[in-house]
Length: 215
Image (cartoon, rainbow, N blue to C red; front, side, top):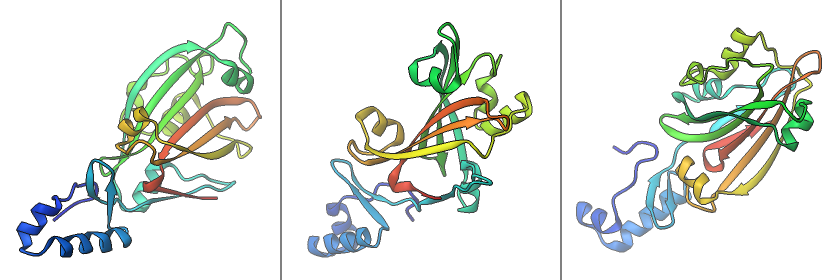
C-alpha cells in the first residue's frame, strides 16, 4: 500500500484505522523502524524507508549512478538545478591548471531514484575544454555520455576520488529531502584524461541513508 518515501499515517490515525491501542501502534512502528522498513524524521513523521542503492568503485571501471540504479531495480532521473559561467577559484585553478583570467562552467544536477533525491552533484568544467556546453543535453540524460560523444572525453584510470562525511545543512536537507543534521557523504572526484591532463572536478552530496559505496 505504501511506497518508498511515503509518509505513514499518524499514531492516532493508525489506532483508529485498526482499532488497536496506542501502545500496540507504537510497538509495531518501533519494530518496523528496527527492521529498517520505516524511518522516523524528527518533526516530520514516519516514512517508508527507501532501499539503499549500491554503487561499486574500482580502478578499471566505476559504476555510474544510472547503472547502479538499474542494477538495484530503481528508475534513475537527473535534473539540472543551475548552470552558469564563473571565474575559477583557487581550488579549481590548482587542479585544472587554469590561468587567473580563465573561467569555468558550474553545473548543478539532482540525481533521483524512483523520484527520490539521492545525490546533489556540483561539477566545474573549464570553458576552453567544453565550449558551448549545453545543460539541456544532460537534463534527464547521461552526463558521461554527453561529454564522451560531444567532446570525445575519456576518463583515465589515474583519476582519483576522496570521500568524507558531513551533516546536512538546511539548504542541503531541503534539496535532498532530508532533515537538517542527517548524515551526508561528500564524494570529490578529480577527473583526468588518459594523457594526464585535467578534465573537470565534481563534488557529490549523497544522502547517506539512501546510498552505499564499495571500493
